[in-house]
Image (cartoon, rainbow, N blue to C red; front, side, top):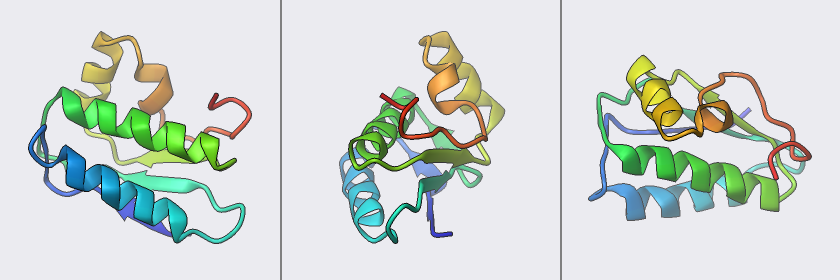
Length: 101
């Protein structure tokens, strides 16, 4: 399974390039393979990291793919919960395409 790894820093400045990288990673997946994002390296991030993950999830759903977030730092999960989207990105389990809409 291919994994897209987020870098140590994901702030507003890096988000446009990271969004392009997510799109490229999705395009490079085998048929039926979910988009798997590894956030374990994240050390410095802001709310744009949450927006990036939501964008990745939407792209995966639009492509009929599942989405899986692994290694989310507790602060990222807390930030997502604060904005009311924790259940969308905070779980390390897979999200099926049908439930990702």
